[in-house]
Image 1 (cartoon, each protein chain N blue to C red):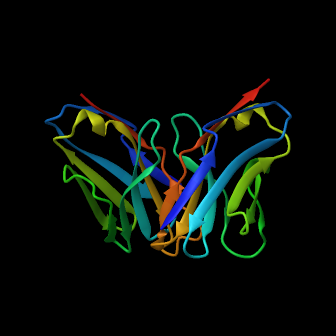
Image 2 (tube, rainbow over the protein chains, first blue to last red; image 1 turned 45 degrees about the vertical axis):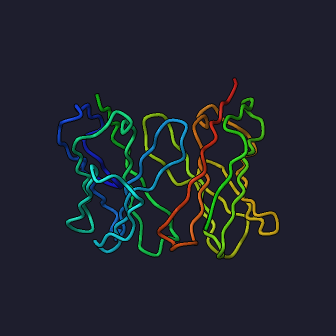
Length: 113
Length: 114
């Protein structure tokens, strides 16, 4: 595997379910990100981990819970979501300095029923 | 604080014509600037970046962008559009609040007409 991978690619869940999104980067980066992409809205930065410590949490509801066990893996744990949480969730990675740009995974298309 | 404004949510060009996608930014510190492309059902792919040095930056697929500090602009151009260029393009800036914090524009969908 190369680049940034995300699983699953598609997820349909009910409002009472608990699920997790997984992201893995194979680029030797040390910062990882979760973004939410909704139709007709700018890309929203949700969480940033730098050297495995969370450095950004943009007022994201507590029903989204990130986890970064090491510099290569990032999870987003989901529980009791709302229909408005349906979106494309993108994971990205970069070097801490940031000047090289971020590298994105293909995303997980989440639908909450 | 930093922000990005992309003028035009949809741009249509004929195949072979010049592509010009506009981006203006604001930043309280010298910015890093990026253009990304997103094809349907895919993530964002880095097209090119400006950090320091030469203000004309060349990227992949024949795209280039010029950093103009006096105009706070970073417009994306390609001399001749190809059908495969049809996608959504995002301008982004980082710097204020830390270089890990990237602010994206709302995107411009490029349509290429045969």
